[in-house]
Length: 310
Length: 96
Image (cartoon, rainbow over all chains, first blue to last red; front, side):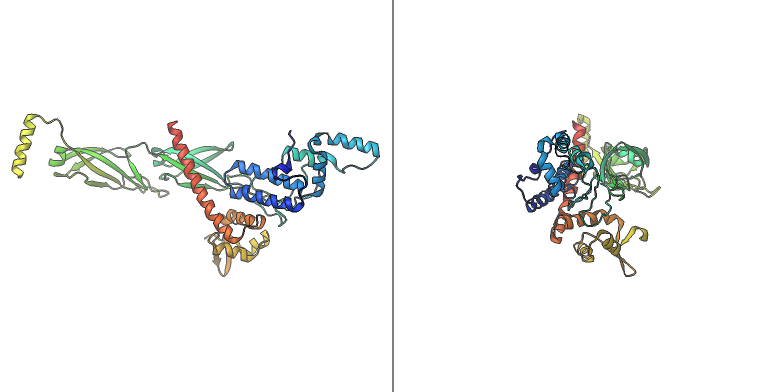
């Protein structure tokens, strides 16, 4: 376990006054406070160090002990025993492991785990007597909210399905309603981090990333698809078979159908979110495929048709 | 709205040792929504995390109300950017 330089953490030198410590602490806390740095583990770790440094340096007794032993803190107990044997009394009451027992003075609270002290601190000052709340009572804090992203294929969200997610080593069974949107976030209450001082657990927010690897374009509950229709069917009319999301359907193409004509297939779209048995529409756009590589005979016939039109 | 999900503002003042004007100011700034039912003011339990955060920033870090408004706005922007970033990283992962 390494020695922690609390002065360095607060960017102070050893001659710093209480006012200097408070000022430095406030300045750094404003920079690294977890509330101002959401989902930033580095800032959270840094804030815990700052809190710990403040805890020690702002308390005259703790500071005295810290300053006295400095880097030799690991030998402090031996040193104290030797001193006691020599003088018969004196030294620090409690010593290592016992702690000072006092509450935290004026330190900031945050939305993070309660276990915020380093091993170094625990060894030197003990783990007892912790309290939170910065002198404004001891309110309960809601635990940290967790954010997760779930990637699914568009086909997967056509029907409701059950999934088991592992969040922080815990399995969570969850039903994903059909028709969930790309980028949509759902909240699962009470599946976030543990509350502080008996506060409620945080929530779990799951954002869906829906990968569309189908030929359909989706806009909410409506689906869009462009379908090729050959020139002669478009001109003279006929039947074509079209793939919908759930299977094939036969469509009648009217004679003289123009490129870009849109056909709406009612109820053949995507399920409406949380509305059972309700579906959007499938909108089909016809793209007319012109014939290529015309033979001499075809060209001749088209020229004849052209003459009839002009 | 389910009354069980509402917390009376007096209770918040009492429990969190804050002045009622603080809650009122958060509401005026659009950070917190106060719901009035039969002349009694409440805050929805879903707003509690935001309220606690603002309380900490105000009382612990001594950020004034104008500062809280700016912080609230910027944190919302940050969250949106983080969300977009996460999405893009995931999408990028598909090609790596």
